[in-house]
Image (cartoon, rainbow, N blue to C red; front, top):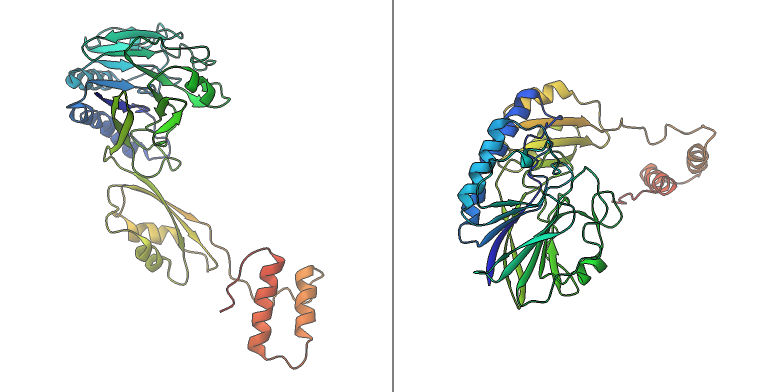
Length: 353
């Protein structure tokens, strides 16, 4: 049995454009500090698989490269790195510059190459993006049947895409025991195609509101009986979104909806529902210090009178006119009929209570 760490999509030195400059710089420093978790998590592992986009681009701060090299050296086991579309292997890439620790193997070609680790009974395959886009790197590949566990580390997307499109059929035909993938920023869980197990661990740190919730890496165990994965969060700041019905007191509504500890995280709060225009500046001032960063959005609607469209030459107006002209109907019952009828006309659900 072998134990491994599978990580991808660190996107070191990402610009964090949606954040104020000082907060963006702080996030990049946090990315570098987060690298120290890799050797901690790799303790007890036999190898580390890094499935691309460790760097957000070809231009990288020197201190970032030093932090990455130090972290990989501290893993103290073989590290296999398959460059992706953001950090593709080119003559000018940091991966080609040298200075990498002796335990680090960086795949540099777009056709699969491998290394045998005889003490572990393992062959590790990999291939690199050598340009920002690439056709399938797995098409036609078949690992040999030679009594070794067959692993591969690869950056790629499921289905048709310009980023190494990978199909379940190619995975099933690969003869691999485990395929360590990168590129998808949400953890996939353990997947299976034929006899091959595979997974995307997701990104290691969220960079925007399309990457919410916990982010981390996989710790895996692999033997002839199969593969087991455990997701390990890296405990960085999270992006979270929250929709809040503003009502008559938006601040009270927000405070009631917030979990206990939000100071370390980045929140987008969407104020919704019918209400008078909320004072966003006053709300931001009242919530100052509650978040690392706050994006507050007014998505409320202005309250409408139930009967304001009466007399209009529209379907709503005709319906309300007909309802108002009904004799012998109690006002409360007439209002209820109006609410339910208008909801039906608008294709929405209205609570009758």
